[in-house]
Structures are given as structure tokens and as C-alpha cells.
Image (tube, rainbow, N blue to C red; front, side):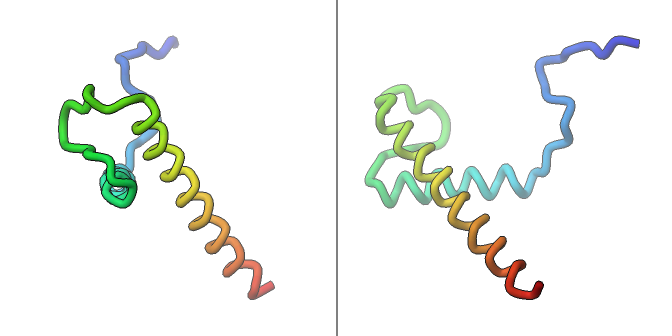
Length: 75
């Protein structure tokens, strides 16, 4: 049986994770001095949006590294 595509991912979405990432996005934009607002942000440049996304990835990697380092200490 074939699965129909409805435009949404078949993976379950964790609402808390989405909210946490959204909060991180706005926090990082504030730290960088980028005026990111709810809704339409077409007035921002690709560079500004890229900075926010890049810093989000950087922070997520740092958090994962800290978590992994803490788990390896008990081996």
C-alpha cells in the first residue's frame, strides 16, 4: 500500500522541541542585533538569516558536545 504525501513529514513532531528551537532563534537574533520578529521577515537579508541559523547550529553542537562529555565521564 502506498503512502500519500500530504505536504507534511511522516515523522511525529515534538511540540516542546519546536518551541525550544523557536525561542533559541529569537534569543540568538537579539544577541546578534538582528530585528527578527514574529511573522514576515522578508526585510532581512539572506546574510542576516544565515547568521541566525549558523549560530543556532553552533549552539546546538556545543550543547550536544557538553552532554556527550558528561555521559562519557561515568564509563
